Image (cartoon, rainbow, N blue to C red; front, side, top):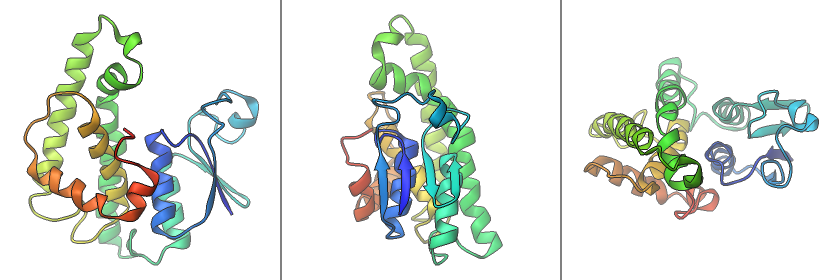
Amino acid sequence: MLKVLGRQTSINVRKVLWTAAELGLAYELDQSWGTTRELSEPEFLALNPSAQMPVLIDGDVVLFESNAVCRYLADRYGDGAIWPADPGARARVDQWMEWQSATLNPVWGDAFLGLVRRPEAYVGRQDAIAASAARWNRLMLVLEDELAARPYAAGDSFTLADIVLGLSVHRWRSTPISHPPTPNLTAYLARLRRRPAFDAVSPADMA
């Protein structure tokens, strides 16, 4: 059985859990790492020297970096539905997964941490929170415009791109900042919420 190390409140852990659920894969989730056990412990660092969750263990295969783990699961256990075999279609999925990790993720830290996760650490840092929220909104409007032309991030069908972006949209909507009107993102999130795997691993009240 697959084993996933990391707490479910981590958005990156939820990417992996959602992917596994979409593929119908059984897994064991060890949430002690990041809760009662430190990611800096030698046992964990031997699996991921970056001291970040999640880590996937699949027999002799040990992987970290959530988007890479999602691709591995889809490639090994999927039928091409959520990560297409066609190079062009696969590249379109990958470009949005890369956009999520390299472009979108770096901007929301101050806003999300300061307003949701660790507000006590952000006392007096309202300018950083506001700047982060403004950058976050600008990038979400990029996705809003893209979704005017298609129901899912990479085309007409649900893919891995929608797993990583769907969680990101939910986090954005759940963070108490001023959100611009985004009817396409609203409809997109509602489509994704109709998938049982989304609610199973990422309840609406979990940002």
